Image 1 (cartoon, rainbow, N blue to C red):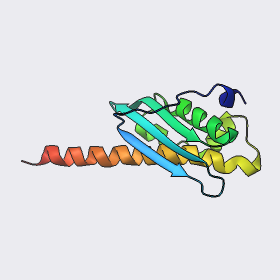
Image 2 (cartoon, rainbow, N blue to C red):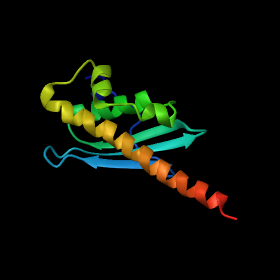
Image 3 (tube, rainbow, N blue to C red):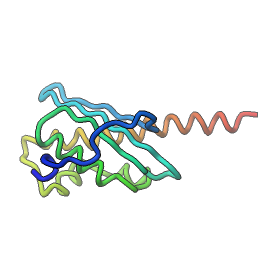
Image 4 (cartoon, one colour):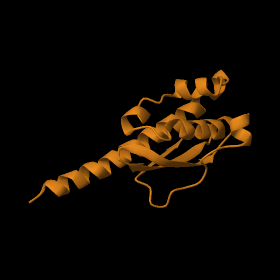
Length: 125
């Protein structure tokens, strides 16, 4: 309840290095997660969440867990880790924690696809 009542890192990053958008059509939860990366570390992270109490809480916790991590470290964040950091979730709400971790992974994939394109362009003569 603490994370729901006082969520952290809510909002958007207009010049984000990576963006991940996910949704669950069954419950209607939607989220978009933004990351800013410098020297392979997540230096800023924000999330826009439309959903239930658990979706908001897990979004907040996921951003707090990922802040300051390297990209490789952030890739290891799982829905179980997020739920454990919140001292558990009711079984029928576990799909919400999956959304936050999944959005983070999609934002990382977006960032990596952009940076791989830049690296290829730098190598061209």
